[in-house]
Image 1 (spheres, rainbow, N blue to C red):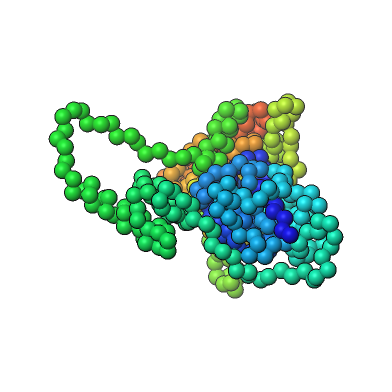
Image 2 (image 1 turned 90 degrees about the vertical axis):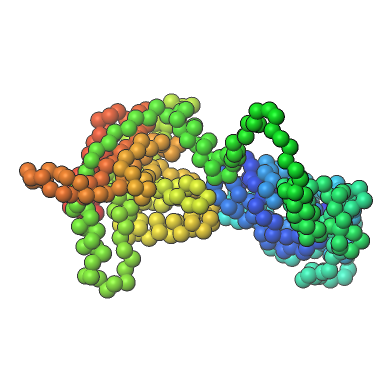
Amino acid sequence: MAQVLEFTLPDLGEGLTEAEIVRWLVEVGEVVAIDQPVVEVETAKAMVEVPCPYGGVVTARFGEEGTELPVGAPLLTVAVGATGADAGPTPADTASGAASAPVSGDASGAVSEPAGESSGNVLVGYGTGAPAARRRRVRPPCVTARPAAPRTVPERPSAPAPAPEVLGPVAVVSPLVRKLAREHGLDLRQVRGSGRDGLILRTDVESAIRKGDQERADAPTAPVTGPAPVVAGERVALRGVRGAVADKLARSRREIPDATCWVDADATELMAARAAMNGDGGDGTAPKVSVLALLARICTAALARFPELNATVDAEAREVVRLPEVHLGFAAQTERGLVVPVVRGAHARNVDSIGAEISRLTEVARAGKLTPADLTGGTFTLNNYGVFGVDGSTPIINHPEAAMLGVGRIVPKPWVHQGELAVRQVVQLSLTFDHRVCDGGTAGGFLRYVADCVEQPAVLLRTL
């Protein structure tokens, strides 16, 4: 006898309250193992594959790709201890979205132990419940007595295809077909299906769309007798990463009384030091030292001298909390938008270690594989907007941090050096800080120390 368990969207941590379904990884009727990823979702932090803590046969899925679900909403139901033959959904089940009365869990997706055996892992490595003491294969739950026959779990039992959704005189089984028709405003009742028993296939929908487009193109154009209609502008939904950035920046501007100071610095010596580090003196196999890694190391040295800026404000308690460790965030532009990965324990790393971690996180960010843990917990942010070819900016603080250092492009400019006019490599540095954690004297001292290290890298020797 199979027991149907409901798996809900788990709590993904860090205050995240919803996620968008990007891609389903399993189909209805498919057998899943314990902790097998079943859906890929996009949160405000990152793309995440969500594993199901139950093993069995998928009897229903909730939400099409592109749908946004709140935490605690049903994701799918699994028949635990079922074979594919006895867990396939009926037409009534498909229409109602469940195969039978499911056993609901809490927002983390966990249920009490008597409801079915599971791993307890809702999102592996993040936001998980406590795993079960032993991890075993799924077995049919016992109702009155333990079955005498040995339990078996089929590797891939055959399951009947899900019943088509009937729309009047036609039938549709694929959610992709319905989505395609909906996007083009096509009434599926007007489409003749070429599949078995009149089933509407994707090719049928695409053919109907092309036919409709051609008919509209051939139709005579009515003369314009009135004013031209107003064309609405394109609307882009603020959700996912873009929505999270918008919310965070708005909150920063709303809650933090920020101020900005800036200074131009002669970066000629810093660039010369970098060239020496990356010169032919080594064996040629060591990774190159980046300008960002050097600036990150300068930041950690400056924060050691001015710890007031490595802090956060507890507004409820009316307290400034100075943090003992530096977790350095750095702004990275990706195809999915601006993200801020965090270098953990930056205060205890040298230039090579910081550079290696920045490179690793940047590659993961470009691949869209950053986890929520990679993007949270920062205490200070470094923003190198010079890569966009601009000289200066007034950064917005990455809430709930207390400061952000912005770095412009390093370009040749006229500069007075040792009493004479010369062409030097000049960079503009800007510091935006929360005026609640310190006054202008502290912020100015921090920025001046950073500028001194840029102009004379030997200053860093005292902190190495």
